[in-house]
Structures are given as C-alpha cells and as structure tokens.
Length: 481
Image (cartoon, rainbow, N blue to C red):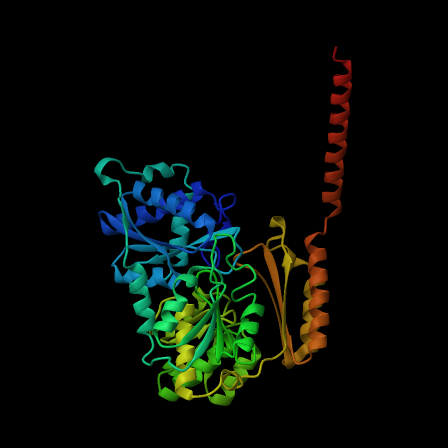
C-alpha cells in the first residue's frame, strides 16, 4: 500500500504531488470514518493557511467530505491550533488543517484532528490510507438527502483569539514587541492579539499574497526581525511559521532564542510557580545538550523522545507532563492546548518578561548552548532507508562519535516531511564539528549517488538499445518516399 502520512501529517508539492484527487479521497475517507463512528451525519471543520493552493485543496476536501455524508464547517484562514481548539469547542467529529507549516509556498499539506482536539493516531492514519488507496473507494459515497452541506463559521476568528488571550492572566502594557508573521496565518491574528493585550506591536512578514509564505521571513529567516528589533529598540521579537504552530524569539540585542531556550525559560518559570508537573519537561533527541545541563543545574528533569511533536505530546499524555516541545519552536503547554501554538507561546513568553521584569537577554542566559551544526542531504526515492546500510558511512559516523566522546553527539535521520537525510552534530569545538559535518555530508552524497556495477551495466544496455532504435527509425525515415 502507498504511504500517505509522514511525521507531520500529509505533505507534498501542491496539486502536482499532493493532488486534488488524493485530497478528495482523503476527505471522503475522513468523513466515512466519522459518519460510521457517529452512526449518522457527522460535522467536520476545515481551516487553512494563506498559500494559493489552500483554496483548491479546501474545495477538494469539501467535495470529498460532503460526498460521504458529512457536513463541512469552513473556518477560513486560521492557525493550526485554531483548528484543534475549535474542533473541540464546536463539538465537531474531526478537524482538518490545510498547511505545510514552515515549508515554502510550492508545498501544502493536511493535518487531521480527532474530536477531542488531538492529532489522530498512527493507527487511524493507517486506516485512512487504506480507504484512500482502495480501488473501490467510490463505495464510500452517498446520494440524495444524505449528501453533506457546507457551513461558514463567521465567529471562528474571534473564538480563537479569545482562547489565546485567556491563556495569560496579565496585561502586556509596557512591552514593545516586533512580530514576524511569515506571511502566513498569523498575519491575520498577531497584531490584534498582542495589541489587544496591551503590548506595542510592530509587524513584519505580514502581507500574505499566496506566494510569499515563509519566503525570507518566519522562523527560518530571522534577519529582518533581528534588524527590526534592534533598529526600533524593541524589548523582544517573535517569529512564527506559516501555520502559526511554531514560535522562535529574538532578544533585544538581536540574539536568537530557539525552542530549547524557550523550554528552559518556561520550565523554570513554571517550577517557581509550582506548576511544572512532575518537575519535568519533554524535549526531543535533537534538543541541545545545553538544555540537559540546564535541567541538571536547576533540578528539572529533561526527558527526550524521537523527533516530532506527536512523539512529544504522546510522552506528555502518558506520564502527565504539561510542558514539552522541540528546538524548532514547537512548544506545547498541555494545560492550554493540544498541539503547538505559536501565538500562545508568544503571549506566555511576554508574560514571563512582564512578571520577572527582566530583559529578554537575561532570560535567555539561563541556558548555555553547545555549538550545533545541522546539514541536509537530498535523498533520491530509491535510497530511502538504503543509505543507512552503507558500511563506509556507518564507520565514519562511529569513528566521529568516539572522537567526540561525552562532549558531543551525532544524529543522522531521514526527514519525516521532505526527501532529505538530516545530519546534526553537536560539540564544544565549532571547528571540529564543522569539519565532521562537511565530511559526513560529502560521504552521504556519494552514497546517495553511488551506482553498483549491475546498475551501470543495465543503464549502458538501455542506452545502446535506445541508440539502435533511434538509428533504425532514422533509416526508415530516410527510406520514406
């Protein structure tokens, strides 16, 4: 069976890769499962980010959902957490977000939420994949009065805004904040939220045109935000990604405060208040070792999971922890949300700034980061999983790990959202890890493009056959009258 879901839902090049037919089938599958579970007409809400392709994928989803006997409730442009929250608030049977998060405008994707506001499980994803790729998928359709209807939720924006505002019990007057909205869903909400709570707000990356989401702005392009913070003398800067699920900060000097630093700040703040459940925060294996050292110093347990917000949330739910997140700025406050929300992360960070009366750089200084380098190597489809079996590459990784010892780490993994292999190296000496990262990336690239003698021979045979065929056709053309 074909694979549809990755570590962050469904994602691909919009319309040509993630095509409308597949999206319509997915909508019909989600609706069919919801209708069967409810025993009658179901309600499914849809939100989207600002990509041009989001409209056509929304139409495809809507067609699929209604054709399976469920009603669609359109939210419009809203952050991903808005879909999660409103699915539960509106008592919907499922929620769907159309977004590719921090990926470029050519991409798009689908995230699906259960009726309780949490992302659907891996088993539920497999059930949907089976229905989507079933040759007899049209059996899920209905007709006549059973066909679903379309509704537009005009109060969705304000219902979400009120949720964010109520997550903090203090006003933000006296704070000057620069906000980078990534030309995505946050552009519709950030200024209203922060100014509504009393902060003075300057925005960048706040003019979405459908093709500029995450382009030169947002969590992965912080230069404009840094310059704005310094030139406008802001207390802090906040950057979001296209669907508003992530938040990365910049202190008053323009220095980056990534997800690890935010986790350190929030965990200490909650611990002082007696609100950090089990005195534990959940991070991933990609988090900087400096976060672990911070935890040891502050007597806060740092437990790690595999990469992915789903893995973090699963650990939090299993053991009752209420704070977790990733280095990329995906922070989860389980007391307030059921998936990462950059808006809530942002207002809660400003709350810490206001209540502690400290500068952002002082807050950031509670954790010292180890130098860390991450590189990505493109992965051809036929090399998926195969590269890890290469003995030379494995030996090189093993040798470098031994040389780093306890002063560093190396993690090599396939991306769950793109055709890439990611290499992360961490250590005390920047020069050493820079050299190691270059060597590993070069070796991995060599492995990716390595061809066996059999492959070379087969390609040569195909080339000769093609030449002979082309020559034969040329002779026939010459003989034509």
